[in-house]
Figure (cartoon, rainbow, N blue to C red):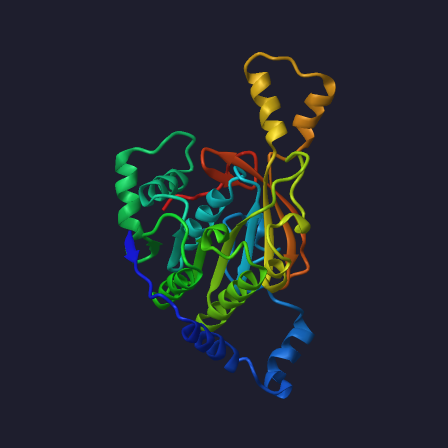
Length: 309
């Protein structure tokens, strides 16, 4: 995998990026006549990068702009993000700025997902994955918290390499979560970079620690920080792993007995949900059920779908 280095943005750099991103967006309404009439006659057309799951293709896309992928710790946010990147890399260059995972761990997860298998991949499969990623999957060589301007510089560097989808994992590691004004400036700067380079930036974010339990998906009000994060994003998705169902399934596998309510819960409840809580470019909002095999997620319980690279 190629290593990306980033310049350290200054405030002036940031202001210049925001100015450039805004300049091309200012025009009189009549300039857009053809686009307006086309949509009026034919309806809204979904545009952007598709997600890995066929059932989502008519519901949402990763259009130019910013999305937020949020969830409780341990609910597979990073795993879902890496699968989206792996799928997208078949058609476009992609970039991952992971501040919480070592690069060898990233490569192992991607290899595991590329096979779609339940078991850990073999070294030969890792070698094949690494060859395949050349000039198509970029990473940022840094672990731990990062100055917000440096994080923006990393995003900018990946966009200049031609990456059309860039994941920043996670916002908590960019030192802005303790200041709502910094948080607002940071997320608006991400939107500016997305517009400037005509790319999609996915920001992985954590929800608050829920006061009760994690038996239900977090809501918009459960996102850490201010509401500005969701306000400026064009798409907001919550990852939710059904821990209760997993516990009951393991209990049954180990020979434990389930009562009628527990059996009904296992039968009817979803094992994993992607909950779309904001979707500016489509009318769809709501849950999408996924099923996990190994570290790969499928939108059917037959585990059908080709994720091989």
